[in-house]
Image (cartoon, rainbow, N blue to C red):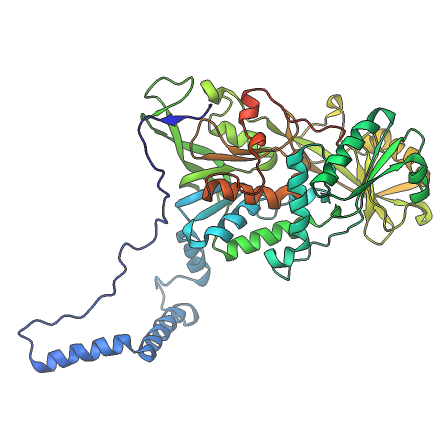
Length: 516
């Protein structure tokens, strides 16, 4: 209904690698008819030697030794032979993919999962390039998240994606290799509700179990019996995940996706996305655009780490830039153009704090304590075996901190987080903050849920962002879903149509109920 459409039937041709040779035949030695028998026999011997595997191997070794001599043997003054460092730098630059089939903008959890699934399924059939501005992932949301895994949602698609995430992590060695250890801790989630939220919590639990989750509802009395460290004043009901819930190492998951994607042939580029290139396509009509004036996107401009500007032409682009996705979309005139382009991608960075604290005399909840969330949204869980815990709370709209730095506000813990923790867990009245960090949250201001699918204006742009805190646990399912859209032409396993950009156009938000 909202898609741009072409006046005449065309088929999108995938761009092939630019540096691939056009010729596949080997050179041959030809002799003229006037050559004598000696010359003819010489040609026959050369052809025979060319097909001899031992001769070919010796020749290759000889060429390699000549290259090595350039580096390990002293050269005369003024020699133009290059150093090993220059050679490797030249190789890196020459290997830059100036053309690709699929350009993934963002190499975090979602972007690397997309690259993994595309290359796992298509291998050499698709040339995939991933642009990530920071190869160290020092400020990446994936690495700074708490790493929770739960099915306690109220929207079917979120439950299905997290169920698949649990299955993926259970069999992660089969997908990512035996060397990847996600350190999954299967102690579950415990969501607590007041009297006002108890009915919604019951409805959510029923839906979750119908779809394949496994959790139990606990009254205040049963909560006190099961978790004696808890103060149940103000708590009417709890939902406790018994299977497929807990927490894991987000960095290990990201590393596994990236390593396997590269092994399958994906190209990672450390660069900052600075703009798109536009191309006139007069044969395409779009809502709100004058006939013949449609402009598509077909290239990306990148600022390399050394400041050099490079260009990558693509057939398909995917915005998976996490908290920066809204800014990347604006580079494609999304939110600043006419017609459908006047509607922005509603994703922006929000800063969230995580505090690591220790309970005095290690008198806090035991090692098998679930990740617990009280009715205010304050959460905590155990952190390792040393008696540490980590926790936090999302600020209210009027408490949102500035995002210009990732500095931690310890006053927020003292004023907002600690009182809630101490009320729920009396032993937390005596705690000491040992560490803390802040990370960016890819906040979807429209309805705080993921946006997955094609953009309605551009016929070669896809979006996978806006998960608002629960993206890392859904990366396996999201990456698979995007690969299905590109390779199969639509969703095949989990139908994420309702999570598309169209819901923003027609103002149909997908709100979670009683979920933090």
